Image (cartoon, rainbow, N blue to C red; front, top):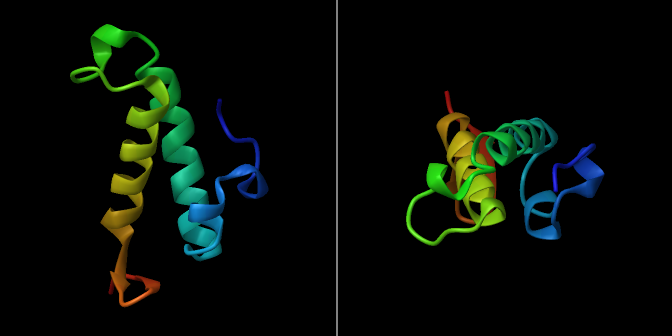
Length: 75
């Protein structure tokens, strides 16, 4: 289920990530959703949705880091 806007993202994303990080998350999730549609493309028994969320969080962590409860852009 790709996300059309950041408002459609899960609360555990919108409640913690800054707007730009939400953009990164949404775009990475949507690409991964398509890329890993086939079970053969995924590792183990992970679902398409689970895989897309993992890819999205990984994309965010490349540009942002969590300090305490706050996510901030890496310098």
